[in-house]
Length: 149
Image (cartoon, rainbow, N blue to C red):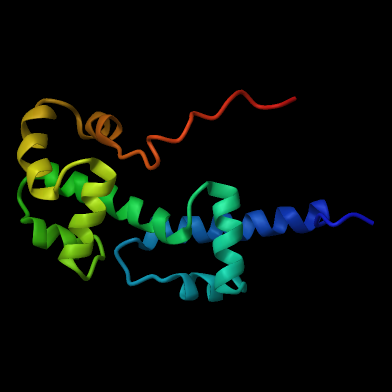
């Protein structure tokens, strides 16, 4: 007998992880934490974190923050909300944490992004602006190679 889970169990686990990711995508502005996500998936928080990272390359918390920052970028490009209003609108409860994570992911503070984005994306349809300005986590990580046969 092998140590790897049965293929059917692995598919069930992947489906649960996909539901967790979909919930994060849907409810990013709500107060979410790994414990609550794990309870919803009937897993322990540690197991969810390990499996999520193995499947998607980042922890559930990092994925949640990436979604929040993506949405914040959209709101900041619009220009009608302050950085503080955007912070709370995307579900962050601390302006300091929001600004730190934003700067880490985007490469500049949200206030600077707000000023620069208005001119750089002027005239672009919102769907194109979103693709062009999408943050990429782990930029220094090597690009994945071709799939192994």
